Length: 358
Image (cartoon, helix red, strand yellow):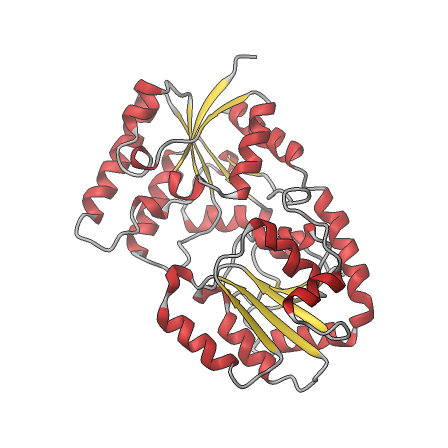
């Protein structure tokens, strides 16, 4: 079979993203030649790159907001330029695939542009990939997709063996200054409003046990000073909460994961979560809302799931985890076994099948 050449766009999210790294490495092994473009040629004028320089067969779009999420007067012009190029690519016979990671950008910047562009991209795409059945149904509904047969479900892959995983629990806790005997909950990753970190802290403040600790590790999105100040103010009166600010390098992921007993995802809105697959890949019990793909990836044997609109959902889930402290290890092992099913060889094969379908 002739080798297909595809360009991943836009560069902003492609560069250094472990999801993209795993997907691209494994797609190459199943006959898809991939191009990861330079940043200047990926978010505005990508037509010459696709047709003239690379002579690609496909463009594969991922997160769309770098194409329009700039707060200046050129938004409409830029949107038109990008859409025009997509239309021209279609006329030249270039196929378009779009992987829908979320239904809107997380900060809801330029929401109208986001919605218009998403509907147009959905219409122009030869194929659309979502990470679960719920996401497929939501995508079809939100973007008024008439041809449901062009929407394919390809699960999100795991992170087993991508990050180092050697440090023992006791050593990890010692490095982070955590007590061996305590039950440790973790929030790890970029701190953004939609992830519900403030609500998590408020909820944790309501728990009175001295035998529990909460670790928050990650960079405040765009180093927002207001969010940083509010965060520090909220944790100031609770010695059980430890905050490790700043981007967590790849080689330190294992430190936080192996120090905790369970990972908390207090999301206020979510479609797909790679972070859940990360926690499962480290064999951790999870606390998360039964929303989007989370309810399809996790089950009650490995997680404390709650309804996202239940005001007491998060606190009840944490209390359940405290009561079942002795079961958390086995719950984590269950999640690890589930994560193994989402290996990248399998994911790449399913993705390649979408290409060949087109």
